[in-house]
Length: 301
Ligand SMILES: C[S@@+](CC[C@H](N)C(=O)[O-])C[C@H]1O[C@@H](n2cnc3c(N)ncnc32)[C@H](O)[C@@H]1O
Image (cartoon, rainbow, N blue to C red; front, side, top):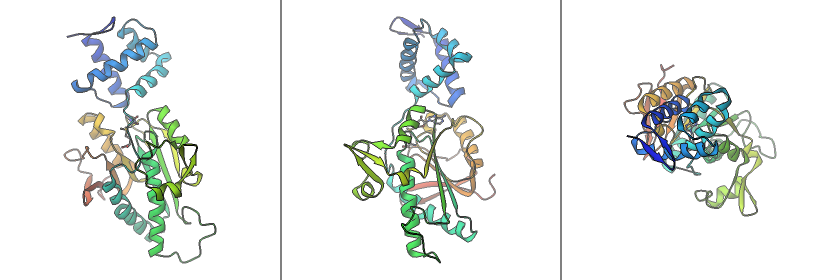
């Protein structure tokens, strides 16, 4: 079977070559249900590059001078849908159980550092949601367990001696730039209630900008989840609605890598439609109400 797109024909062999290249570069797997989307995006890029065959486009992608085009193609293939406070029950689990557990365990060891990672962060809403929840979670924890000394005034967002780092990473430079900018329109703010808007955003025209103090907690960086060397020493990883674009083999590899990237007894959150069931023995499921997450088992390396 071959597919004709406008005047340029995409043969079955070319499609296979391009599918394999995309998979090898970023782990995204395009099965029959998503082949049409892949073909459409390939055709757009081929036209931009003014090439007359998909094979020439493939040759460009694998060449040294085609590195930039490859990055652009991958960017065009990603689905960047995201929102603030996505999956509320899971976020309740994060704030009321996971964060409490981490604060309790770490304080006992006098380890006052917390590292969170939004892997596949898109335009940043997930990472900023985590930041708001961590700040509120810490404040609430110290309301019930007061610190043995006075905190400096004006009160910092993160009470000393705690140090909070939130890494937000993605494979797409354009979404990373948007996240770094941290300015959202009314539609994007749909899930943000007024108390969060008042405390963590400044109104800029008809849009909302993340306040500087919250923004400083989040650091945006490029990381391709397909690569071996990923950020280490995390207490919590959010990788939601990313693995669903990978096939089972790639999902298994990624979960193994996440196990290595997490501190002992750290937590992994995956999307509502994703699961670790049958893919690993290194995590156990934890849940409250309908919110679920996975905790790394003690002996897992
Ligand atoms: C659907 S969005 C999910 C955003 C957010 N995690 C959420 O659940 O709202 C998926 C994101 O994963 C990113 N992504 C896809 N493959 C990736 C890879 N190999 N490495 C890093 N990011 C990737 C995409 O660029 C996209 O921004």
